[in-house]
Image 1 (cartoon, rainbow, N blue to C red):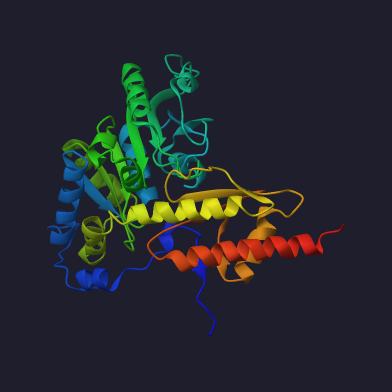
Image 2 (cartoon, rainbow, N blue to C red):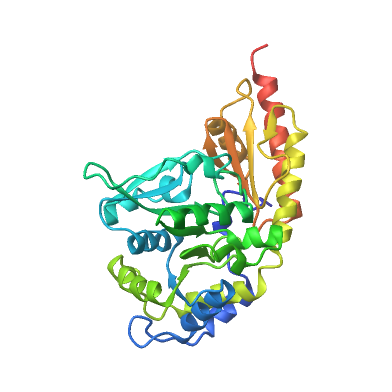
Length: 353
């Protein structure tokens, strides 16, 4: 019998568990755009409380949550400071420009992590020829950095600097739950230095839909208007919010299992000739690994893995990303490593002498 694919493309590919489906089917609902939806209301109260902020807004996606935040903090012609490989800059279609008329100053960090030295001298404004820098955005954990975690003291330092410069601060915390699982630092501690925070329920937590924007009551009041403008006003969406609420209550402790399996992947990859993990010690649930140029390109290697039923994501000319999640078990990890080993052997046997 043919096995279903072992899917390591992203932690967004998870499917709701039977218990989560049951919670979704039984969720009380209302019209969230009108009088409100009781399940969404509970989710918003819960996540705001967890992050130590006044209010939260449930939205369809992390991209929408981020873009609403940019709109809140900036006006057309303003500039955002962010890391050069962050999600807001790389994977949101330049929404900051298309939706809000903003400019971005992308600054290269180390594995996605910025330092104070990187930001010095980057503030612009006060001259009619220049944009006005208004917002600092950070990403924790950092996707393209390989699931890297900002040191908490670094975050405090950067946000203190931003406030001194008169900037607002926003955290793309799509995988912030992974940062908490890996470090023991609470969500509230991660969130404290920021004006707004975005978190995603459909990644490591395994819910099928949704993110939340968290901040002050006034910020979230304004965010509701922007959500409506961007087409994110949902009606009886308690059905999907119930999946997020279930995940918050039941799927957080198990994130440590994803991290352990990611480390097992990296250790196994390091033992295969021609492959090397970007991080020998994997920060969270994202494994980046390089393919030797003499062996193959990442695109070629990824296609060969796919032919064996192992799905990954090309992340650069010589880099592949594999992500562990709710639907990846120990046999899936072994299957992944066996496929990598067999693919390398096949490439080596067919390469010119």
